Length: 196
View 1 (cartoon, one colour):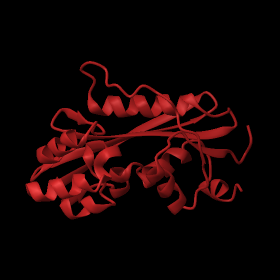
View 2 (tube, rainbow, N blue to C red; view 1 turned 30 degrees about the vertical axis):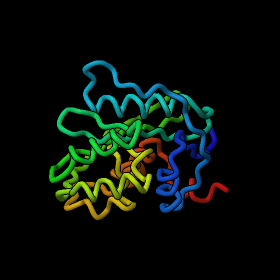
View 3 (cartoon, one colour; view 1 turned 180 degrees about the vertical axis):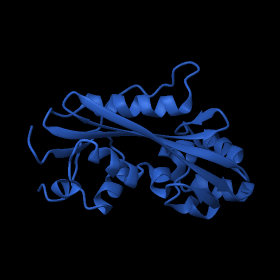
């Protein structure tokens, strides 16, 4: 295997790419096409880890380091995915109002036949959201492609009362933990920064 692998992001998420770029990492984007339907009775942590591993396994060559990730907002035991329409987005935001919820991201790294994965959890508390808050936010269109119907790095930042854990996890890729995962392969991230 090459000593300086190409980093591949098996995701079309511009937020994940932005996070890697902010850490100085160059990545080729090759979105993985995997079924994101939860299995019956599947715990949320198992769900995001399974999808991350599936995505990492779906693209890339043996000499490349592939990163796959999946994020879910979890309200109690319910996994909140991306809303299918504005009504569902509003319902999700109402359910999160004035409450704490978990954001889980599964991250998987694969090089050749070896795959390593982790699940990172962050607790987020929302302030009380009024109907006007929710209607305004959904009207911006921002929640429509976001797990749990919100983007903490966007207009929904004003909804957040507190965060316990990784902020980048809530955005979609826990950076510190991802770099730790890459290190399990004996790869110096400097080689990924200087690749091209």
